[in-house]
Image (cartoon, rainbow over all chains, first blue to last red):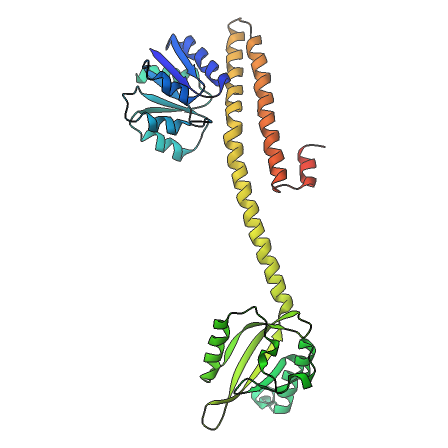
Length: 117
Length: 225
């Protein structure tokens, strides 16, 4: 299971990497601190799952989703500090978006991902 | 004394005229709008002598506050023989403006067409000024409230990420310590994230002060000085 995180907050991505390793969900995680960098990396390889932040400088999560709409994409799970129900609804209506996790990410959230898979 | 003496209709015309003269600003114009009569109150409020007013068009006290349409609609109404009621802003001899609540009543001639107009008004300048103050305060409040909403939104969005990290880090530290591991790597991060959260809050507070949401006095209290 190859998991990519796209989030500009390095403390957050490190925490999630630790959780992912501990739960054994994946031993191949990669963190991108800009959506633009992740977009470029998609040309080389495709992960099995993308954990995507919404609010990022430069390119935000919405733009990333929009720009990858026509590509073959793995499932995306939004990982956000947003608690806006309208935003959640909007995200979950997108076909490639499989889930919505509110920060902080807990062990249970990652376990749930494994079960859903 | 019979009871009917206490009805308005039964009061002597002289008494009614005296009341109107003393309590209101009164003028009478001819059909063309030339002033034929003004009472003392009119002279006092407008700062003109009677001699400066008689024979002059009523627009001598006109301000440029109202549109051409405003006066056209007024003249259309009274020209038809109907009375008109409204608030008018006039200009004193000194140039200062004054507001009057006005009743204009056409005086019908033998043919029924107006031969003149009787105007009875009272000054409402203070009321008007008060109204304007309330309005500007209201729009200021609306503006401040909108800023406050934006601020609340901004706080919610910017302060949540480090708080979420703090929760994640402290839970990680708890787990590490429970498992007998060294929690010091987490402890360092916790303090860094707490400082980050504090910096974000400080920035928000500075912006709140700069954009006039809280004034200096409040801000001193908020920052605990």
